Image 1 (cartoon, rainbow, N blue to C red):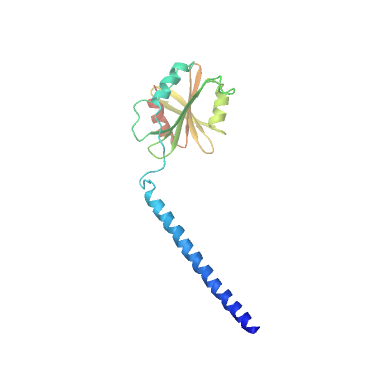
Image 2 (cartoon, rainbow, N blue to C red; image 1 turned 45 degrees about the horizontal axis):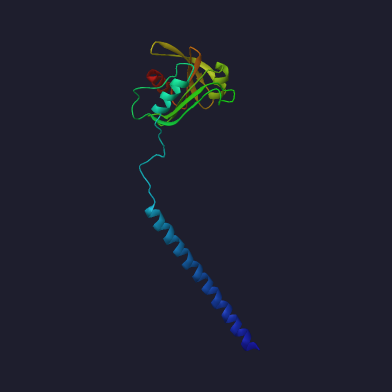
Amino acid sequence: MSHHVGVAGESRGMRGRQTVRDMVLSMLAVGAVVWIGYLFLPHDASGDGVHTKEYRVAAASAKRAAPYTLLVPEGLSDKWRATSVTYDPASLGKGKGNAWHLGFVTPAGQYAAIEQSDVARDILLDATVAGGKPDGTSEVAGQSWERLQGPKERALTIQTGGATTVLTGTASYEELAELAQALK
């Protein structure tokens, strides 16, 4: 009987070594497949992950639909990269009026957006610069823009005709003024 116990004990020890060896071989096989897959996936080491959008066609369409003079930047350098663009007519705006949005990554790598709507000015400011406090004015192209500083972002705002325009984001006042200068 003791002979069978010895064989069983040896068998269990051999099985344990085989299990560890099989696990290591499996991990090496999976690692090789992952490494080969990585080699064939397209990746751009120089990219910053910003996905730019073409906004001119959307802007032209929104200009025809908006009941106010829709403002769109012209002449910004290629370092201003558009990342989002929407126009929501009042019928789709869920009480937010006609709303134009155009977002950018600025040359300094910050965020700046144009928010323009015909809702009440206070409602738009609360939605775009939550907790914003008056911070003076900026003169841009002969117009006085009110400055607001919020806890996370800042803004330049102006009332034009039936709409309020807010330039907001983490961008500096100087970059927001550059964006305001380009609005046509």
